[in-house]
Length: 316
Image (cartoon, rainbow, N blue to C red; front, side, top):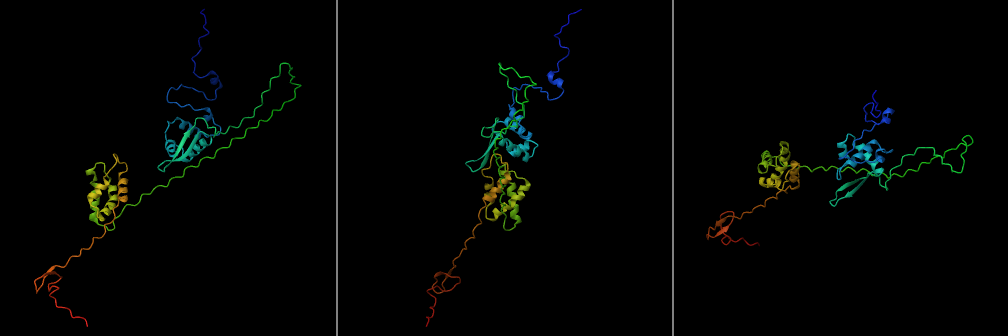
């Protein structure tokens, strides 16, 4: 009879811890060591008792982003299926518990921006609310060596002292959401005072021919019809087609994105004033030849010069 090898396994291992596999319930972790593209997140965040799942997931996502990434409410709403209201509430939760800090600053050009700082540990100045401790029976103190233990029958029943939970730290009030900036409405395009079909055709042709001088100035047909009245207003005020063409095509960017809006702004902001009325030319009287002395003089009709005219009767 052959020798039995007791060290050989009876069946293949499943890779799952034996204690967990026997229990039949609970989560089983099958972990793989990460060597690149990973983020370390503390259990104080992932197992937070007072943060919602949306806030915990949002905090983990923000900590995984590189420095300088945009985390505005609209950007996050475009990235995730949650609404802007839920994302704003989650940001306020993270800010109240010290994982996020948002401050508004004014740039030298007058623009107001929001500076956001993400903390993987809550700041001491903004502590997170501690979870409520569970009521547990205090462990019995070990008896000294020289004191004999009292039998259980003779020992009085000990009543555990109640555990008073610590007072929660005051939460900082959430920062108010920035007020939405009013949308700027562009001013209306100039309109000619009188309708002239011929002038309108010249204006539409001028806009359509701009691409001949510069291929970047390629307008859609609807933009040509929309901007043609403004060009006609320029022509009505005495601007030549060459002057209008030079104003619209001067100093354009390398790759114009909103070309029609740029031309509409130029037609509105650089609108020339109307020409003043031309001064009335007063022509002098034509030259006439005196009938008596043949002297030349200016007069509206032929006749005599001033010296040959008969004197007027003196007033009495």
